[in-house]
Image (cartoon, rainbow, N blue to C red; front, side, top):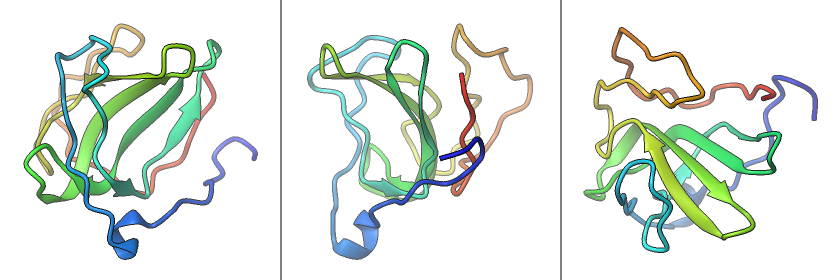
Length: 119
């Protein structure tokens, strides 16, 4: 796929998948942390081979469906997810900020169907 192209996604919501997100301590890899079921979430692989997942439409920590603005990193070596930022709740207005990103001054809601970019 080229830069900015969307990949095929499995529509878990339409397929009847229901898995709320399990958020551990922000920035800490954990066997118990896992993003909730979602669709239309942009993903990318960084230069270290880690998978990143941002927002989309899906289930938050409380099992409520809606726009998500959470940011997750999956390390294929350790097979652990890390919640990197954003909100545990759908449609919350909180910035997603990591050491790799410039901190945001404005608060942003979830945004499904975004484009991917290269690291």
